[in-house]
Length: 428
Ligand code: PMP
Image (cartoon, rainbow, N blue to C red; front, side, top):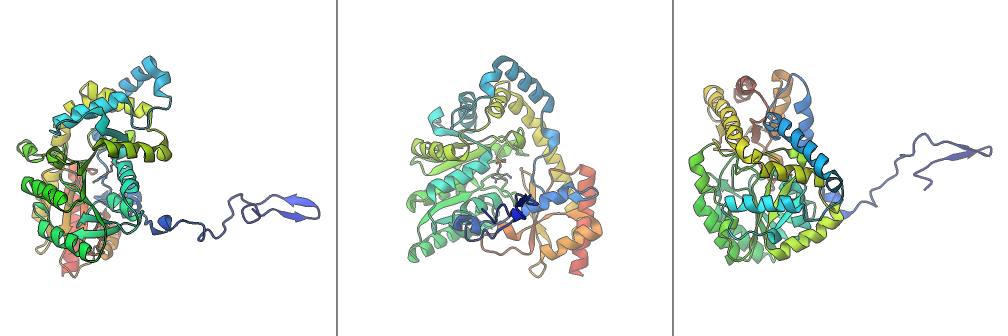
């Protein structure tokens, strides 16, 4: 305690310590798990997006212009007026019943058959779901397979628990199944315990790639054959730019007869991330374990937030906003892609997403996107996120992610011109 409160007694008088937050060496106190944790490259970059004068393609947050602020205000007022005491009280760990019903309805609309309230857990965003699922299934050394590249928050959730992270190649139609099989067999030979395949099938973060329908079926068959679980993370499926494509976006969960698939989604991209409401759809024994682990995580999510989201669903606000939300992001994406066609030098490749918030860029092998970022910021005041942290195999130094969600269309065009200039300088 002397180290924490270094009060000195002088001549019989206690001198007040300068700070109650003196620093001792905590290294031997920190857990093994926390020593494995790494700060998110995206979160670090997020600070930059707030600096004025920077055109930022870095932060992946949805555009605040899509939040139905006025409607949410009206709903919050009416909830507090009619049911304020319950809305400000603790609630059930697995979520507010009205929101669970909304998620059941939403899941049926997304063509996941047979979902009932006993198959749903509401979480504080799908990020909490990833954390809880990791805690439920992962012992140190267990193997989780990731697309190369994959979502940093998913990678971190499993890395924090000392899972062994194995990367699988990704191509146009999503994860490369041959590579997946060879990685699974390799793990078997090495005596590693392979448990989970983590996939983001729709307009993936960070690449914008969509998993083809055939691959969805084949992936499920592989999971069954090799006794693996599939964590299907679907925050972006509704942010689809092509109505004709919606039929192809069948959740893997909708074909799951044996209970291998754990489906995650969120209201973050279709309503508001600040309301922190995501969900899990899974078989009952998994939901029961989520109940257990969530109890020590937060007792329950915010009841006020959950009631607001449930009411937004009930009044059709989320559903009715979707067409304009899709138009909004489609238009931004088109501006970005057109500007890239017009200005990017040859030898640079990028994805052409049909939904979501991201375009993924691959530079020639010899270029390092982290080194180039310094110049992009200094000389052109334009930001992106470097690609390496999205790779569990430490590769991808020549890649980067561009989010088209935040900037205006004029700034997107301008920012791409600036970025193209920086790349051209490096190529020359
Ligand atoms: N999964 C993926 C693939 C994401 O991109 C995100 C957010 N960027 C999340 C999960 C977490 O979202 P939230 O916690 O806001 O639901």
